[in-house]
Length: 295
Image (cartoon, rainbow, N blue to C red; front, side):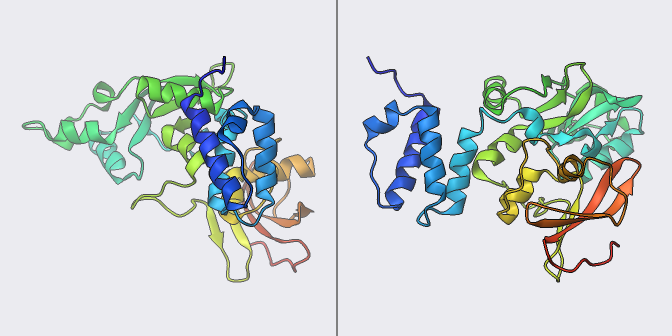
């Protein structure tokens, strides 16, 4: 007896059928249902070589396959890039920070950014301000903050997506095996792995990336490799590192100094700025192009 297709399987098979049809080939529904994950992955790899399929559609299908292969740590916003609320700040400053932030939800910490005690939602703050006789100075952010949800950094994206949907929660704090805060992940982060960037009127194009007139790219070290690959249609590996700075450190086997340059994967990486042991800004240009001075 044939096992019923899950909704996710039906979606994957439907997308594969659409892509295959564009290339002029045909696969029957029965073939798709019985195909293994490895066989469908091989079919996808073949489709990537065909000119008939749009890149955006191929990226979406690849994102579906990688939900099981990727972990939360691959898509999370690292703790060094997190924007949070200090519970000890004056209420007026807290309200101003929340209302001026491009994010709907922000972690609330006390004494240390590692000690996250809640999650502030902009809607809850606005609701509190709408109460009779309420003003910014009377807002108790700890009282109205939601309880934080901590998830392991090794959780697969598929499991985390299911957990988000099951709990009807959009925001989680990521911790390592010792319970140390590593970053945060949102439902939007995972959905963007499937459909690409979900931009709204408050979003920047790609935070931390700037195209220069000479064709080079200025990149913050914390920018995820996957985001760069998707935005620029590059193919930098992300097996051993999550961020572009991590890739340079992994490949060079050292913590580079400012103005040092390295060439790998067809790109020239020039270190522009370093803070302590962190690479914070790089210039990336095609290999073989003349180096510009590191600013």
